Length: 485
Image 1 (spheres, rainbow, N blue to C red):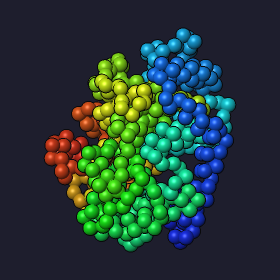
Image 2 (cartoon, rainbow, N blue to C red):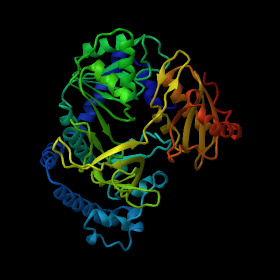
Image 3 (cartoon, rainbow, N blue to C red):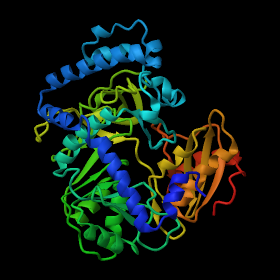
Image 4 (tube, one colour):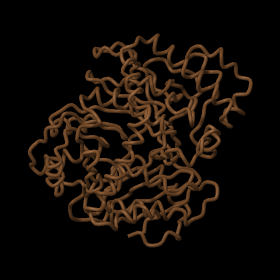
């Protein structure tokens, strides 16, 4: 049984009550996201859309100084770390170099020291990063900051794609909306309040695609969001099954890297433009593809730097790490935060769409291989499973054959072997019958570029066998997780 009593209770409800629960949750989120300061924030973000680069940078530095002044007074981490920093003299992006970089592991180990001490954590909205690199972090949001974030997403994402939050939509994401071992439809649920159809990304196949598409048609959804890999898998499966194309206003994908073949499949089957969005739960670096097909950063979210390995700024066209200073969440400010993603500033910054906002390219760091189940399903984006055990420093799933994989775990502070069980339970609840061989390791293998991928499929990557075989052989088997078949 999965170690999440709320999900277990949800799964035990009949479908109609599950949809009632989802609709009530949607009503609560609607009040949180679109109440309070949202209307004023929406107007403010709209006014910034066509400002010049100089005006935007001036506005960003003004916001940064405001956040820094508050942080050194009321946030324990920065009160200690920024002692002696002359904040009034921070007048341009170049001056950010006097501030130290913030590593994700440091944030993870001392999360509450980054909170404004005037705030009650119990009254804040909590969200967890996906852990796509195997390491999850809790992010705390004051309600008004969430309202500003939603205003940015409405203007910078939905308006660009020609849609809005109020339009009916379908979502194909990573939430375990139905149990992984479920073998019969429906593999979807309705959130009636938000006019939203949520579809499981874990049950898409050629045999189920026709039912998925029929459910979307019945829902009258006008646009589609979710993981690019999952939506492309549905498009491919539907075309393979001979299903007629389904016309949408737009498809907006995020959460994993959109490959050219995925885009082709999505646009062919859904007969619309597919927009790629870049972001993270921390919301410090957000980007949206414009109608001309270029990825523009959203200046309202944060100040983005592209840094090389020694901490120096990368020249345009050179790929480096995305380091971001958030401007939305002053309740948990993240300053010069190392996101773990990599990108390059485009050499050519002029865009036919008319936007003056910075353009990035070569965005990497969110590519996860999928797992192949015994019955041939392809399951991607399992990163939320890593949220289950905070004592796990980082983790990686390494598949050697269909239906079997190794779960490599690097222990963190206070780790016990049984702490891996919630992670195993989460994976099995999502995808059904599957063998996970849990192994403890000293380090999680990295890619040649220094990234740590959550899922690696060795069956089609013989070049990686030499690197992983000794790691698996030397690893310590974990026998306290019980039966996972």
